[in-house]
Length: 389
Image (cartoon, rainbow, N blue to C red; front, side, top):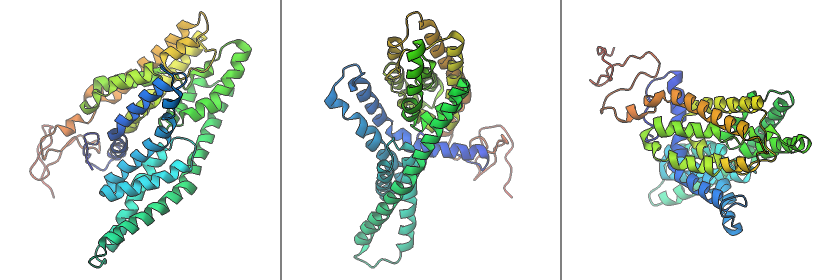
Protein backbone atom coordinates (compact mmCIF):
# COMPACT_ATOMS: atom_id res chain seq x y z
CA UNK A 1 0.00 0.00 0.00
CA UNK A 2 1.67 3.24 -1.14
CA UNK A 3 1.25 6.38 0.96
CA UNK A 4 3.02 9.76 1.03
CA UNK A 5 5.43 8.13 3.49
CA UNK A 6 5.88 4.87 1.60
CA UNK A 7 6.56 5.58 -2.09
CA UNK A 8 6.52 2.45 -4.26
CA UNK A 9 9.81 0.57 -4.34
CA UNK A 10 10.77 -1.61 -7.27
CA UNK A 11 13.51 -4.21 -7.45
CA UNK A 12 14.48 -7.35 -5.60
CA UNK A 13 17.87 -6.47 -4.11
CA UNK A 14 18.78 -6.10 -0.45
CA UNK A 15 18.44 -2.35 -0.68
CA UNK A 16 14.92 -2.61 -2.04
CA UNK A 17 13.97 -5.11 0.67
CA UNK A 18 15.22 -2.81 3.41
CA UNK A 19 13.40 0.14 1.86
CA UNK A 20 10.16 -1.82 1.72
CA UNK A 21 10.56 -2.80 5.36
CA UNK A 22 11.17 0.81 6.33
CA UNK A 23 8.18 1.84 4.22
CA UNK A 24 5.90 -0.57 6.07
CA UNK A 25 7.11 0.82 9.41
CA UNK A 26 6.54 4.34 8.16
CA UNK A 27 3.05 3.42 6.98
CA UNK A 28 2.16 2.32 10.51
CA UNK A 29 3.90 5.09 12.45
CA UNK A 30 3.84 8.32 10.48
CA UNK A 31 0.06 8.64 9.89
CA UNK A 32 -0.22 8.74 13.69
CA UNK A 33 2.49 11.36 14.26
CA UNK A 34 -0.15 13.86 15.38
CA UNK A 35 -1.02 11.57 18.28
CA UNK A 36 2.67 11.36 19.21
CA UNK A 37 2.91 15.15 19.21
CA UNK A 38 -0.23 15.44 21.35
CA UNK A 39 1.26 13.00 23.86
CA UNK A 40 4.56 14.88 23.82
CA UNK A 41 2.89 18.20 24.53
CA UNK A 42 0.81 16.78 27.37
CA UNK A 43 3.87 15.12 28.87
CA UNK A 44 6.12 18.17 28.59
CA UNK A 45 3.50 20.41 30.17
CA UNK A 46 1.79 18.46 32.91
CA UNK A 47 4.11 15.86 34.44
CA UNK A 48 5.56 16.79 37.87
CA UNK A 49 8.79 18.05 36.25
CA UNK A 50 6.95 19.74 33.35
CA UNK A 51 6.31 23.39 32.62
CA UNK A 52 2.91 23.61 34.33
CA UNK A 53 2.56 20.51 36.54
CA UNK A 54 -0.99 19.27 36.93
CA UNK A 55 -1.66 15.94 38.63
CA UNK A 56 -5.07 15.45 37.02
CA UNK A 57 -3.97 16.14 33.45
CA UNK A 58 -0.75 14.18 33.96
CA UNK A 59 -2.87 11.05 34.31
CA UNK A 60 -3.33 11.20 30.53
CA UNK A 61 0.36 10.47 29.93
CA UNK A 62 0.47 6.80 30.91
CA UNK A 63 -2.67 5.53 29.13
CA UNK A 64 -1.83 7.38 25.92
CA UNK A 65 1.65 5.90 25.53
CA UNK A 66 0.86 2.41 26.83
CA UNK A 67 -2.58 1.90 25.27
CA UNK A 68 -3.69 4.52 22.74
CA UNK A 69 -0.52 4.85 20.66
CA UNK A 70 0.16 1.09 20.33
CA UNK A 71 -3.47 0.45 19.41
CA UNK A 72 -3.37 3.20 16.80
CA UNK A 73 -0.23 1.66 15.31
CA UNK A 74 -1.77 -1.82 15.31
CA UNK A 75 -4.97 -0.46 13.77
CA UNK A 76 -3.06 1.34 11.02
CA UNK A 77 -0.86 -1.68 10.30
CA UNK A 78 -3.91 -3.92 10.05
CA UNK A 79 -5.61 -1.48 7.70
CA UNK A 80 -2.60 -1.54 5.39
CA UNK A 81 -2.89 -5.33 5.08
CA UNK A 82 -6.64 -5.92 4.88
CA UNK A 83 -8.63 -2.72 4.97
CA UNK A 84 -11.11 -1.96 7.73
CA UNK A 85 -11.55 -5.58 8.82
CA UNK A 86 -7.81 -5.94 9.12
CA UNK A 87 -7.65 -2.70 11.11
CA UNK A 88 -10.22 -3.90 13.64
CA UNK A 89 -8.60 -7.30 14.11
CA UNK A 90 -5.15 -5.68 14.27
CA UNK A 91 -6.29 -3.32 17.03
CA UNK A 92 -7.78 -6.20 19.06
CA UNK A 93 -4.61 -8.27 18.59
CA UNK A 94 -2.51 -5.31 19.73
CA UNK A 95 -4.41 -5.14 23.01
CA UNK A 96 -2.92 -8.54 23.81
CA UNK A 97 0.64 -7.24 23.77
CA UNK A 98 -0.42 -4.08 25.59
CA UNK A 99 -1.71 -6.16 28.48
CA UNK A 100 1.16 -8.65 28.27
CA UNK A 101 3.98 -6.19 29.01
CA UNK A 102 4.73 -3.30 31.36
CA UNK A 103 6.43 -1.14 28.74
CA UNK A 104 5.01 0.70 25.71
CA UNK A 105 4.50 -2.04 23.14
CA UNK A 106 5.16 -0.20 19.90
CA UNK A 107 7.29 -3.04 18.58
CA UNK A 108 4.61 -5.54 19.55
CA UNK A 109 1.96 -3.40 17.85
CA UNK A 110 3.96 -3.31 14.61
CA UNK A 111 4.03 -7.12 14.74
CA UNK A 112 0.53 -7.97 15.92
CA UNK A 113 -1.39 -5.39 13.85
CA UNK A 114 -0.30 -6.67 10.42
CA UNK A 115 -0.19 -10.28 11.64
CA UNK A 116 -3.77 -10.20 12.88
CA UNK A 117 -4.90 -8.60 9.63
CA UNK A 118 -3.04 -11.22 7.61
CA UNK A 119 -4.78 -14.04 9.50
CA UNK A 120 -8.27 -12.62 9.01
CA UNK A 121 -7.43 -12.02 5.35
CA UNK A 122 -6.67 -15.71 4.92
CA UNK A 123 -9.86 -16.66 6.77
CA UNK A 124 -11.90 -14.41 4.50
CA UNK A 125 -10.37 -16.05 1.45
CA UNK A 126 -11.17 -19.48 2.85
CA UNK A 127 -14.87 -18.70 3.30
CA UNK A 128 -15.27 -16.31 0.36
CA UNK A 129 -17.37 -18.63 -1.78
CA UNK A 130 -18.81 -20.83 0.94
CA UNK A 131 -21.18 -18.53 2.81
CA UNK A 132 -24.87 -18.91 2.09
CA UNK A 133 -26.83 -15.81 1.19
CA UNK A 134 -28.09 -13.97 4.24
CA UNK A 135 -25.31 -15.19 6.56
CA UNK A 136 -22.54 -12.92 5.31
CA UNK A 137 -22.71 -10.39 8.16
CA UNK A 138 -22.99 -13.10 10.81
CA UNK A 139 -19.96 -14.99 9.51
CA UNK A 140 -17.92 -11.81 8.98
CA UNK A 141 -18.55 -10.52 12.50
CA UNK A 142 -17.93 -13.81 14.26
CA UNK A 143 -14.84 -14.66 12.23
CA UNK A 144 -13.30 -11.26 13.00
CA UNK A 145 -14.19 -11.61 16.68
CA UNK A 146 -12.77 -15.11 16.98
CA UNK A 147 -9.55 -14.31 15.13
CA UNK A 148 -9.08 -11.06 17.07
CA UNK A 149 -9.62 -12.82 20.38
CA UNK A 150 -7.19 -15.62 19.57
CA UNK A 151 -4.53 -13.17 18.39
CA UNK A 152 -4.95 -11.08 21.55
CA UNK A 153 -4.41 -14.17 23.72
CA UNK A 154 -1.30 -15.06 21.72
CA UNK A 155 -0.07 -11.50 22.25
CA UNK A 156 -0.42 -11.83 26.01
CA UNK A 157 1.30 -15.21 26.17
CA UNK A 158 3.98 -14.82 23.47
CA UNK A 159 5.00 -11.33 22.32
CA UNK A 160 4.80 -9.61 25.72
CA UNK A 161 7.15 -12.02 27.54
CA UNK A 162 9.57 -12.02 24.58
CA UNK A 163 9.87 -8.22 24.59
CA UNK A 164 10.33 -8.22 28.38
CA UNK A 165 13.17 -10.73 27.99
CA UNK A 166 14.80 -8.58 25.32
CA UNK A 167 14.53 -5.53 27.59
CA UNK A 168 16.21 -7.31 30.50
CA UNK A 169 18.99 -8.60 28.24
CA UNK A 170 19.62 -5.11 26.84
CA UNK A 171 19.89 -3.76 30.37
CA UNK A 172 22.41 -6.43 31.30
CA UNK A 173 24.60 -5.63 28.29
CA UNK A 174 24.56 -1.89 29.05
CA UNK A 175 25.53 -2.60 32.64
CA UNK A 176 28.43 -4.77 31.43
CA UNK A 177 29.70 -1.99 29.15
CA UNK A 178 29.52 0.50 32.01
CA UNK A 179 31.50 -1.73 34.37
CA UNK A 180 34.19 -2.37 31.71
CA UNK A 181 34.70 1.33 30.83
CA UNK A 182 33.39 0.95 27.27
CA UNK A 183 30.89 3.79 27.51
CA UNK A 184 30.99 5.07 23.88
CA UNK A 185 30.12 1.56 22.69
CA UNK A 186 27.00 1.68 24.85
CA UNK A 187 25.37 3.81 22.14
CA UNK A 188 25.40 0.80 19.82
CA UNK A 189 22.81 -0.74 22.13
CA UNK A 190 21.19 2.29 23.74
CA UNK A 191 20.14 4.11 20.56
CA UNK A 192 18.40 1.13 18.87
CA UNK A 193 16.77 0.27 22.19
CA UNK A 194 15.49 3.83 22.50
CA UNK A 195 13.89 3.69 19.06
CA UNK A 196 12.03 0.55 20.16
CA UNK A 197 10.77 2.54 23.17
CA UNK A 198 12.93 0.66 25.67
CA UNK A 199 14.61 3.91 26.72
CA UNK A 200 12.95 4.19 30.12
CA UNK A 201 13.74 0.57 30.97
CA UNK A 202 17.44 1.07 30.26
CA UNK A 203 17.73 4.56 31.74
CA UNK A 204 15.69 4.17 34.91
CA UNK A 205 16.27 0.45 35.34
CA UNK A 206 20.05 0.38 34.85
CA UNK A 207 21.80 3.71 34.31
CA UNK A 208 20.06 5.86 36.92
CA UNK A 209 20.65 3.48 39.87
CA UNK A 210 24.32 3.15 38.89
CA UNK A 211 24.60 6.91 38.41
CA UNK A 212 23.05 7.66 41.79
CA UNK A 213 25.64 5.46 43.50
CA UNK A 214 28.50 7.18 41.64
CA UNK A 215 27.11 10.66 42.22
CA UNK A 216 26.81 10.02 45.94
CA UNK A 217 30.54 9.30 46.04
CA UNK A 218 32.06 11.90 43.69
CA UNK A 219 29.27 14.46 43.31
CA UNK A 220 28.45 13.79 39.66
CA UNK A 221 28.07 10.96 37.15
CA UNK A 222 28.34 10.61 33.40
CA UNK A 223 25.89 7.70 33.51
CA UNK A 224 22.97 10.12 33.77
CA UNK A 225 23.82 11.36 30.25
CA UNK A 226 24.26 8.13 28.29
CA UNK A 227 20.61 7.73 27.35
CA UNK A 228 19.17 11.18 28.06
CA UNK A 229 21.48 13.26 25.81
CA UNK A 230 19.14 15.33 23.59
CA UNK A 231 21.89 15.90 21.00
CA UNK A 232 21.46 12.83 18.76
CA UNK A 233 17.72 13.37 18.42
CA UNK A 234 18.18 17.08 17.73
CA UNK A 235 20.66 16.39 14.94
CA UNK A 236 18.37 13.81 13.36
CA UNK A 237 15.36 16.13 13.39
CA UNK A 238 17.39 19.00 11.95
CA UNK A 239 18.43 16.73 9.10
CA UNK A 240 14.79 15.79 8.51
CA UNK A 241 13.77 19.45 8.57
CA UNK A 242 16.31 20.32 5.86
CA UNK A 243 16.68 17.15 3.80
CA UNK A 244 13.83 14.80 4.72
CA UNK A 245 10.76 13.97 2.62
CA UNK A 246 8.85 17.16 1.90
CA UNK A 247 5.70 15.71 3.45
CA UNK A 248 7.51 15.50 6.80
CA UNK A 249 9.67 18.61 6.87
CA UNK A 250 6.90 20.79 8.27
CA UNK A 251 6.45 18.50 11.29
CA UNK A 252 10.15 18.52 12.25
CA UNK A 253 10.28 21.98 13.92
CA UNK A 254 7.45 21.10 16.32
CA UNK A 255 9.16 17.79 17.08
CA UNK A 256 12.40 19.67 17.83
CA UNK A 257 10.65 21.89 20.35
CA UNK A 258 9.10 18.88 22.09
CA UNK A 259 12.31 16.84 22.01
CA UNK A 260 15.04 19.38 22.76
CA UNK A 261 13.18 21.90 24.90
CA UNK A 262 10.52 19.61 26.34
CA UNK A 263 12.77 16.59 26.78
CA UNK A 264 10.36 14.08 25.25
CA UNK A 265 12.74 12.01 23.14
CA UNK A 266 10.04 9.57 22.02
CA UNK A 267 8.87 12.15 19.51
CA UNK A 268 11.82 11.45 17.18
CA UNK A 269 11.65 7.65 17.33
CA UNK A 270 9.04 7.38 14.53
CA UNK A 271 11.33 9.39 12.24
CA UNK A 272 14.00 6.72 12.67
CA UNK A 273 11.52 3.89 12.21
CA UNK A 274 10.45 5.42 8.92
CA UNK A 275 14.01 5.10 7.57
CA UNK A 276 15.78 2.47 9.68
CA UNK A 277 19.21 3.27 8.24
CA UNK A 278 19.12 6.56 10.16
CA UNK A 279 19.72 4.63 13.38
CA UNK A 280 23.39 4.86 12.33
CA UNK A 281 23.17 8.63 12.74
CA UNK A 282 21.89 8.49 16.31
CA UNK A 283 24.44 5.80 17.22
CA UNK A 284 27.28 7.94 15.84
CA UNK A 285 25.94 11.05 17.56
CA UNK A 286 25.44 9.25 20.87
CA UNK A 287 28.95 7.75 20.81
CA UNK A 288 30.52 11.11 19.90
CA UNK A 289 28.63 12.82 22.72
CA UNK A 290 29.69 10.21 25.29
CA UNK A 291 33.31 10.47 24.16
CA UNK A 292 33.14 14.25 24.56
CA UNK A 293 31.68 13.87 28.05
CA UNK A 294 34.56 11.55 28.95
CA UNK A 295 37.26 13.85 27.54
CA UNK A 296 35.89 16.94 29.29
CA UNK A 297 35.10 15.13 32.53
CA UNK A 298 31.44 16.11 32.35
CA UNK A 299 28.76 14.73 34.64
CA UNK A 300 25.42 15.53 36.23
CA UNK A 301 24.46 15.47 39.88
CA UNK A 302 21.13 13.73 39.19
CA UNK A 303 19.12 12.26 36.35
CA UNK A 304 17.60 14.96 34.09
CA UNK A 305 13.88 14.35 33.91
CA UNK A 306 12.63 14.88 31.29
CA UNK A 307 15.79 14.91 29.15
CA UNK A 308 15.54 18.51 27.94
CA UNK A 309 18.30 21.06 27.68
CA UNK A 310 16.75 22.96 30.60
CA UNK A 311 16.70 19.85 32.79
CA UNK A 312 20.36 19.31 31.91
CA UNK A 313 21.26 22.81 33.06
CA UNK A 314 19.28 22.34 36.26
CA UNK A 315 21.34 19.30 37.36
CA UNK A 316 24.76 20.38 36.05
CA UNK A 317 27.29 20.91 38.86
CA UNK A 318 28.82 24.36 39.30
CA UNK A 319 31.57 24.91 36.76
CA UNK A 320 30.60 21.89 34.69
CA UNK A 321 28.58 23.57 31.95
CA UNK A 322 31.29 23.54 29.27
CA UNK A 323 31.61 19.75 29.15
CA UNK A 324 27.85 19.19 29.23
CA UNK A 325 27.14 21.71 26.46
CA UNK A 326 30.07 20.43 24.39
CA UNK A 327 28.80 16.84 24.56
CA UNK A 328 25.31 17.86 23.47
CA UNK A 329 26.58 20.06 20.62
CA UNK A 330 29.02 17.43 19.33
CA UNK A 331 26.34 14.72 19.48
CA UNK A 332 23.89 16.92 17.56
CA UNK A 333 26.51 17.89 14.94
CA UNK A 334 27.63 14.30 14.29
CA UNK A 335 24.06 13.00 14.18
CA UNK A 336 23.07 15.79 11.80
CA UNK A 337 26.03 15.17 9.49
CA UNK A 338 25.50 11.41 9.30
CA UNK A 339 21.71 11.69 8.91
CA UNK A 340 22.08 14.32 6.19
CA UNK A 341 24.47 12.07 4.30
CA UNK A 342 22.17 9.08 4.65
CA UNK A 343 19.32 11.22 3.30
CA UNK A 344 21.55 12.15 0.37
CA UNK A 345 21.21 15.82 1.36
CA UNK A 346 17.69 15.73 0.01
CA UNK A 347 18.31 13.43 -2.96
CA UNK A 348 17.48 10.09 -1.28
CA UNK A 349 14.41 11.00 0.74
CA UNK A 350 11.83 9.34 -1.52
CA UNK A 351 10.46 12.53 -3.10
CA UNK A 352 11.94 11.66 -6.48
CA UNK A 353 9.74 8.56 -6.63
CA UNK A 354 6.63 10.43 -5.61
CA UNK A 355 7.27 13.11 -8.22
CA UNK A 356 8.16 10.75 -11.08
CA UNK A 357 5.94 10.82 -14.13
CA UNK A 358 3.26 8.13 -14.34
CA UNK A 359 4.77 4.95 -15.75
CA UNK A 360 8.35 6.01 -15.07
CA UNK A 361 10.62 3.72 -13.09
CA UNK A 362 12.83 4.96 -10.27
CA UNK A 363 16.45 3.97 -10.09
CA UNK A 364 16.89 0.22 -10.08
CA UNK A 365 16.87 -0.91 -6.44
CA UNK A 366 19.20 -3.78 -7.15
CA UNK A 367 22.02 -1.26 -7.29
CA UNK A 368 22.82 -1.65 -10.97
CA UNK A 369 21.83 1.96 -11.67
CA UNK A 370 20.14 0.92 -14.92
CA UNK A 371 16.53 1.63 -15.71
CA UNK A 372 14.68 -0.80 -17.94
CA UNK A 373 11.70 -0.28 -20.15
CA UNK A 374 8.33 -1.40 -18.86
CA UNK A 375 5.13 -0.84 -20.83
CA UNK A 376 6.92 1.64 -23.04
CA UNK A 377 8.15 3.85 -20.17
CA UNK A 378 11.79 4.63 -19.67
CA UNK A 379 13.44 5.58 -16.37
CA UNK A 380 14.65 9.06 -15.72
CA UNK A 381 18.27 8.19 -16.52
CA UNK A 382 19.42 8.77 -20.06
CA UNK A 383 20.07 5.18 -21.03
CA UNK A 384 18.83 3.27 -24.04
CA UNK A 385 15.60 1.39 -23.56
CA UNK A 386 15.99 -2.37 -23.52
CA UNK A 387 13.53 -4.79 -24.94
CA UNK A 388 11.90 -7.30 -22.66
CA UNK A 389 12.72 -10.86 -23.52
